[in-house]
Image (cartoon, rainbow, N blue to C red):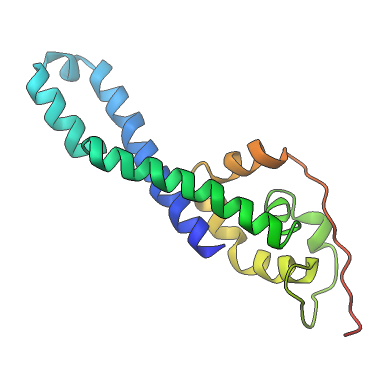
Length: 142
């Protein structure tokens, strides 16, 4: 999950740079530059073709990581978007991999990071919807 967040932040930073560049290029100052200067600013801001390709590769890796996280624990990513069904449960004393208790504990540790990563919530909502339902059954009697 941490690796997924890191890669999401890389993609988000590049998207923010692209958005800033678009705004700048439409401004009077941006319009006043010749093509060579505009290209240099673009390469400095969002990178050259090789760097843009690397960011696109990061985007694909995020998708694959989310696929794998969801296969390993179907409660994990939906709980980040819709934490209340899981957070309304008492704190589990332990967990088993792939179970809702694991999602509960990871949610405690990383939800803030997802929420603070620009575009991460929208990315998850696109995949799971705004209020996904998921398994919240926690075995408190290990």
